[in-house]
Image (cartoon, rainbow, N blue to C red; front, side):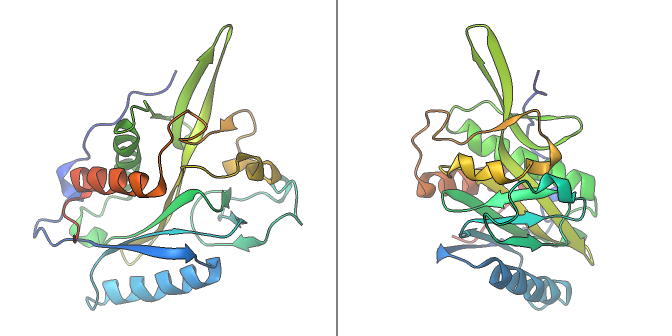
Amino acid sequence: MLAEPLSAAPSPLIRPDGRPVEWVTAPGYVPYEDAVAEMEARVAAIAAGKAAERVWLLEHPPLYTAGVSAKDEDLLAPGRFPVHRTGRGGQFTYHGPGQRVAYVMLDLNQRGRDVRGFVRGLEAWIIGALDRFGVEAGIREGRVGVWVERKGPGWSREDKIAAIGVKVRRWVSFHGISLNVEPELDHFGGIVPCGIAEHGVTSLVDLGVLATMDEADAALKTSFRQVFGAVET
């Protein structure tokens, strides 16, 4: 069974000074290398006190990323899409159109300096957003990401609907989360997602929730405020 959905994150995740987070949505598809370069620059500026925190929402063209724990044998179709080796935590992940990627650049010096608590906050953020669509989601011990339980006559299974992979430098976070709104689910077949072969992948539309990307973004913004505090409007 899935773990119970998470409630609001602990108060240290909300900045004591109430300073709002910059909330940016990129048009079109952002090349992965460009996104990483932009994140690197922004993280350095945040750490130096020269820039505000940012949540950056975007979509990538189809690609696979390999985190620091990725195993070569989990790349099942090496020539299918470009593969990017990255310094985030985790294993292989797919990104592509119809998937909302949110890169989260927060100053954890102002939010409790608790990486485990930060990850729990990311989980709570996604779970809260899904709840706005009537989707009951949760976490699993030993499995990264956010999961939904699916049932039918004589069967049940757990599918992953959102992935989490983060890195922290000088107590500033980057990389982040990906929520499957309406991606091509067969594109996940070129990898073993996050090293977990015995479970599937799903999306809002696959679950029968005909949400647009704008509607998903609105749900993410509302839930983010509840977990991490104010955002710029």
